Amino acid sequence: MKADLRDFTLCAADSANIALTVRAFNQTLESCNFGDVLFFTHAHVEGPFRTVKIDRLTRKRYRHFRLKEVGTFIDTPFALFIEWDGYVTEPRAWDPKFREYDFIGARWPEYSDGMAVGNGGFCLQSKKLMNALTDARFAADTNEYFDKLFCRAYRSSLEREFNIRFASEPIADLFSYENNLPIQPTFGFHGLANMWRHMPDAKMLEIVEQLDPYVFKSRHFTKLILEYSLQCKFGIVEQLYAILRKYEQSSAALGLFREHLQQPHADAIFGLCERLVMRA
Image 1 (cartoon, rainbow, N blue to C red):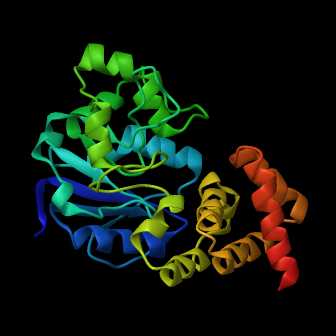
Image 2 (tube, rainbow, N blue to C red):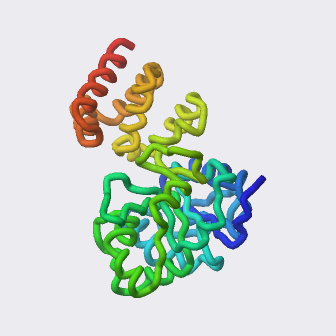
């Protein structure tokens, strides 16, 4: 049975992984009914959504769009934001209590200061929050990630001056996950490193082949290699690392592993990957 979210607009914005964003729309629409569905992109693309043409998105442009512009296109009380690597997976995990909050996103486990709820790659935002973020005091011209801005840097002001309600950590853990292991089925998730949990291995490899090359330098791609290594799926590890090596020399790949993984895991997984591709 589909979740009834007709008071929500389902939306995504992308200029790099467009085909995979369309896939994320399709996955989510299999599980939920929405009042509106919007895809913000520079490209001509068809799918089960209304396409809204915008300038090509860079990281800076995406940050400004999510903080300052997207709310002008939303007519429903709430929006569900998805990305190519984050979508609805379990509609039965939807809880009407989620509507009591202006923001819900996956918890960031590295924070213990009461401001750990914040991932924006798969999140619920109210129209009230989107309107509040247009206030001039909430700057978008920084190098910080957009969700770190309004969920951490601006959170106190949003709560105090605009009465914005951020979900508690237990509520966030029911809604989605990203960098923490899920302890129960969640409504959705975010992150390439988690996608293997929601599809067969062959499909995962098919998706990786479609990725824009910028993704291969990301923390999530390195963590995906780690996840398959821990499962002893060495054939998949070899294929993933071979894709990375199409774009990066061995020394650069080692740097990515050391940047994204803790030691001694970084050097150990890198060494494994090198041995696998040298054996091929």
